[in-house]
Length: 110
Image 1 (cartoon, rainbow, N blue to C red):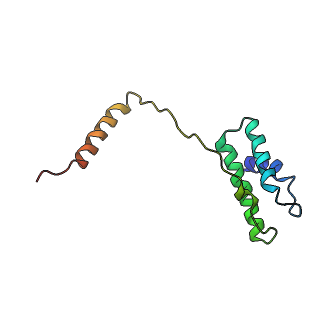
Image 2: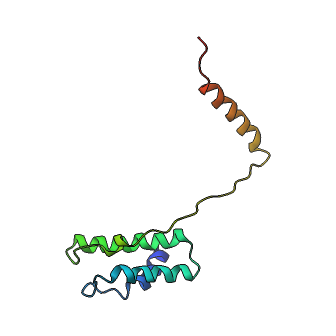
Image 3: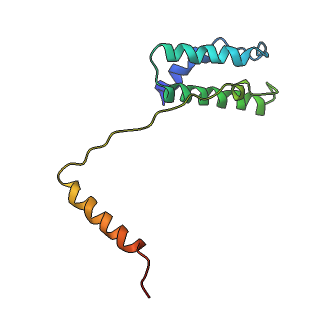
């Protein structure tokens, strides 16, 4: 958790509550693009966006801002697909599971 907070500091340092303007979404987008260019994955960039949104939401709730500029910044598409392999120990269990599911979903013959 401390590492995430440390990483977010450079994102939030240039932001001053008095200077947040209509350009803020573009500034936030630039910062997130810079993270992506450094090699961060889209999921990681989205986590930074979420953290920034939380900070700005708290500012809105506390009357420091009227709107959350992060809401205008789109999330990046994440690729969460993983290729999985079965080892020899798990193969029989999977087959048994298929059989039990097939039996339980079979229509009754009455």
